[in-house]
Every structure is written in structure tokens, then in C-alpha cells.
Image (cartoon, rainbow over all chains, first blue to last red; front, side, top):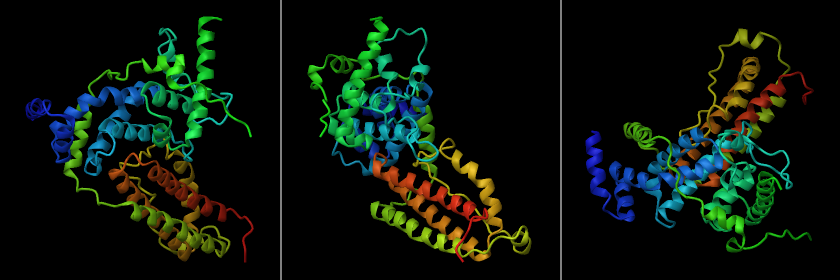
Length: 192
Length: 192
């Protein structure tokens, strides 16, 4: 059985992405595995940076690809496959953050960055030197999300706002806030 | 009007530019494909999800709101409960909490609030008049229908923020239903 998948995978890796997407839409698991192999790093990277928790990011990455498989018949290619996967991943992350009353547990309303959520920072290895990646991980969720989507993955404010379900102005404000917090943390780390 | 200084463009901001240089791909510590493949295998054994679309999901959401009004009316007319009488005189109506589907992302953590409410709700529910119990169950059936249809729509469009919000709204409706029953049965003044 596994050999079948491996053989199938060898057959599809020479195809371009649109062909593999088309095959996966027809139910070819090997084609979908090939897409998974190509995109898992970006999806996992996004989930890890948004959650700061490796185990959670792994679960959400799996959820993302299972959702994508189910939803392939509805994928019309209006956005790139990568962007489409990222939208699913962002929704999975946001859904995982919802508290018992539907509130985003990690969302903050304070523009000064008070009452910050430290889950991501706590999850980091103490021995890891604090760098930009670590500083991003310690940001409150709203600011971190926009730095990850806009700063690291290169989405526009409009695209990031669409993924996060917030207004473009909110994205810009969060980025503004993130810049201040990042600079403060980098300065603190540098001991200045 | 206050103007928020959103700062320099992406390429003019050294910190954001540096974030853009971070690797996009992060490899998970383990191969996540076997877990995904197993879940895809489980999916193959199930009947294909019904192809609900947006109109159906939206209609379900509106129906929840409409039927909830019936419950409020019923509870306001409910006579003050007499300990033991309803439970002793009538067979308990079948009550099952709403089941959220695999696409919903609502898990045990999100259901904690419901778990807290349910014991008291069950006690109050058992003491309601049969007619009011029927209205409660009718509400629950409508909420379950909405949850099913939104879940099915999410299977086709998992990246939809609006569908996710509708699902959270449905969960809130369920919590609200239990709260109203608990509150109505706590001896608070009621309209006669």
C-alpha cells in the first residue's frame, strides 16, 4: 500500500503544480502528498509562528491539509494554491484560539501592549538566544499575526486583513504597534 | 481626528525587511503525512458530506434566531417549578447537546463553558413543563441543523472567516439557550 503511494508520488512530482492540484481534485492521494511535501514547510512555519507551540502547530498543519483535501473540489484557482492553503491555516489557528465564549483568547485591545500574552515566549527554549524570531514570538497575538503574514510571508495589508477577518486599518495599526514592541524588546535584549 | 502614523513602507523599514528575510519554510520535527493520510483514509470510508452552500448556512443561522424567540416566550410563561413534580410525573425528554462537526474547529477546550453549564441545565430542564421542554428541544434541533449546515459549508470553504464567525454565533446560541433555562428556573421574577 505504502509502495503504491511512493510509486504514485514519483509519477506526479514531475508534473507542475496545476496538474497535481487537478489530480488531487480527482482524488489521487499521491498527487496530494506531493503537494503536501512541497507546501508543508510554509504551512507549518506559519502555524508555528502564529501559535508559538510546536505541538499545536503540528496539529494545525495536519488539520489544514485535511481541510484542504476535503475542500479541493471547491478550489477554483482564483488564488495560488499556496495562498489558499495559508488562508485555511490562518483560519485553523484563529479557530484554535477561540475561548469558551467565542472570544479570541490571545487578542488584545490595549494599543500600548499591556496584558500581553506570553504563551509563545514561554514555549521557546530558554537556551535559545533572543533574536528577531524570538522577539516576534513574544508579541501579543494581534501584532504577531500581522508581522508573520505581512513581514515574513509578504502578504499585503489587504490580503492579511482578509485572512484575519479584520479591517485593513486594524492591520496597519497592529503593525505600527508591533514595530514599537519589537524595537523595545530588541533594545532590551541588547541591554541598551 | 487622530492620525495613526503607520510608519514606513515594507522596504523602508529595516525591522520588517529583516523579518522578510527569515526562512519561509520551517520543517516540522516529524513527518506529519502519515497522520494526514490516516485521516484521509477515514474520510474515504464516510459518505461524502452533503453539499450545503452559503444560502443554506445563512438560512440556518436566521432560523436559530427566530426560534430562540419562541423559547423566551415559553420560559416567561413557565409556572414556577415545584421540586420533583415534573421529574416524577413525566418521562424525561431526550436531551442531547449540539454536536459540532469535524470542520468546525470547536474542540474540548472551546466546549468547556458548555460543560460547566450542562449539569445545572439538566436539572432545570427536567423540571420544566413538557411543552416548554419541547420548545427547548426544538431550539436545540434548529441549532444542531445550523451547526451541521455551517460545518458542511466549511468543508467546501474552510478559509471563510464569516462561516467561522457564524459557527461561533451558533455555539453562543446554544450557550444562551442553556443560560436562559437556568436563569428562568432560578426563582427570578417572571412575567405573569
